[in-house]
Length: 424
Ligand code: BJ8
Image 1: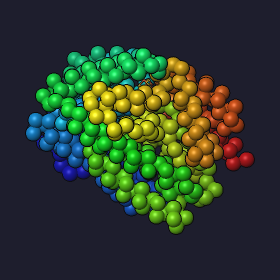
Image 2: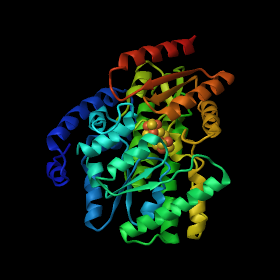
Image 3: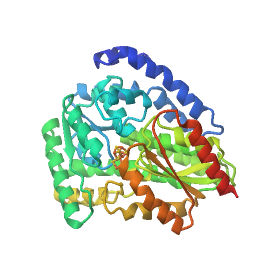
């Protein structure tokens, strides 16, 4: 990585501690990613982004702030980025995916809190992530109890706005969510000093839709057999999409898809045609959480689709681009976001339907349902997932894990045993 020490010092980061992270990441990335064979050439860009993860994009965000722009940090796929971009702001994902930050979160959170929340709080409190330092405002949501309380802790550090996400999807809930988006527009307008006009919102709806279209195109290529890209690489693209510039992300993802489509036309893949095809579902895999994909793929199976927030939940469904007034656009936004199926909703049959549909579309041999430790929502819903998959004769393995490497060998054994059963 180029030298960004002055930038990190200006951000009042804990440089010594941050150095430890900078030392560990290249090795972790090299071991998981650069050991793969026959990677698409277009992955070079995404490798570069990771190699400069705490440098290039943070520097761009700071440039934006120098011209008076605001940066909003988000933690959930229900936050409508469109509103932020329409007000001339930039949205950047902040979910922590590294064990490195967990101990910082544990200083203030109960031990039985999910690692995603611990890592996110730890990244802020330990001053070891530039994105957490740069964001002028954090946008939280009421999805799960752990997050709801974490916002109160983070609010002593940085301005936090919390969007009330409904827990059901009745008509009145979708209406209530429209009201929340209207309130969010007002908050963002006041914070940025810029009006959200129908023209600006229309443009940002197209901007974010284009990113979604690009990711949809990428995922479509994974339906091919042999699969032209590893699950690890596809996961990396989705993880980066949370914080990269949306237009550049769409362009780079489209370039990658073009290369993959050419591969498909030559019947070229990264796994043999008879490799097992796996769908991963469950809690999000925030960057740099690559543990499960690495275990599955080094055991010879291909992850071909993720029913995750770092997967299809992030980009399936587009916002209607024909709405002309703010009210119509907000309605279109609410309708699109309420199509996303997180376990925080009750009931949540849409997620089960999605898993079955994706399993068929991507012709999977089995499903791995992964749950971050202490996430009650997904862990409880796993019972219903198992029940529904059993009824459809789709084999499923449920695992519970965290960000540490402690359970690595145990997980590997369980995944290998599952793959063995699928091969019989
Ligand atoms: S839409 S999955 S990003 S809430 S894993 S913090 S739910 S205890 S991350 Fe999520 Fe939005 Fe839902 Fe997606 Fe809580 Fe569970 Fe932790 Fe979670």
